[in-house]
Image (tube, rainbow over all chains, first blue to last red; front, side):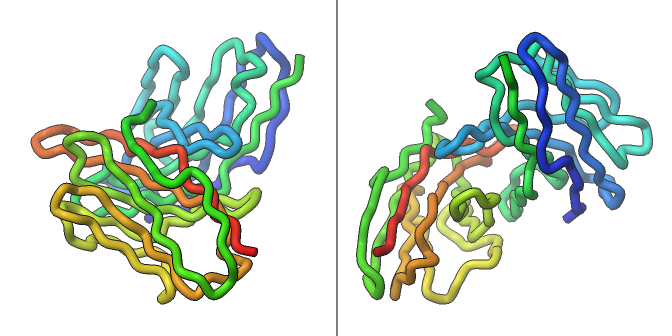
Length: 112
Length: 115
């Protein structure tokens, strides 16, 4: 499983765009990049997944350069409710035999 | 609502005791994953079951065991409990036959307090 490195914590303000970068130098050909969000005392929730280039959904964008050794989660116009821990995961998609491994995550704090 | 149900939500027990945590996966999901999250710590992968069989194992203690039943619900058994076992225990489900499975869906967790 590819090891991921992401900032321990980040601070921002309401209305700003927040970019969280994750490094994964040992990403394998079959690996996808997936981001989850976790609020205190709740289970993680899927945000977005990508393999290469750019993926966008209703809550975030994911930018992946051509070498796939890093990725950036972009949250547009954050609000207080975006305060959470964000996990970057690199690995194969869930299958009949797969470990879904979480790293330490980035603790994002949004201020008014 | 993720569709994954965990019971009980809270559990308080004494050291040395044994408890069973239950997880009902999303309808149609064949895989169940168990995680432990201690206070302000990350999610530690414990074990994965697929259609009743153990398929992947993490750093699960020998005092812990799990199983997945024919109806696909799963139970995590924790025995000889120690104070350090106090944590949130999450169950997740995924993997539907014939589909491209992108994500795991997590339950709300069981908060275990060992006193």
